[in-house]
Image (cartoon, rainbow, N blue to C red):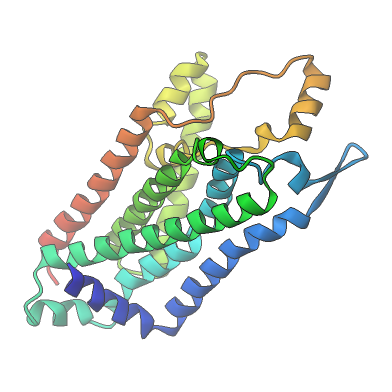
Length: 278
């Protein structure tokens, strides 16, 4: 396993574009700290984001993981090109000539995908601790780590999405087309979402069906955190007279669905490679 990961890291680091994308990704994650200085004017009222509780424990775990997940597309480009370059430069054939099996090839890619997700998770975990202890009004351990499960959800979300990118790269074999495939699938899920909302009147049934789709299931692992903002609740309370009860956690079945899709994409990648004439 260590040997396979070492091989993939060497390939990536020798690619200038991949190095730039990886470094850009982690630099952008660091910019989450700059949100503390941002101010928002809404309905003539100015709000400083840091004063709305976004950096308070335990809410910060939810907010930081949600925002950090937005930047995952930078690593998606790296993963797609990592696979596509194997076909473009013919290194995939050379790997097999040198004795690497197709199972080991897919395993090496998945290990790299998992390593990216783990490195991102550790980075966000440390960043959240630093920001939380710098700005939060609550620093008791029982409060600080009460919502740390979002870190686990973030890791699973990245592994699942990167596995999808791995599958797209193996299936299409060209970076641009693989990214296009991912985008088209995202559009397909949005169209299906619209069709379900108009054809199925029961909201819970619609959400349950949508939650079975791969990208939607990954999205459900970390739900939007903005309705937890103090200013949002104040505005919503004035507009409707009450603040609806929302669930922001992670259901056990949402975890299982994401794990299923992760395994599915990895196995499909292997099956495609195994049957393909290289």
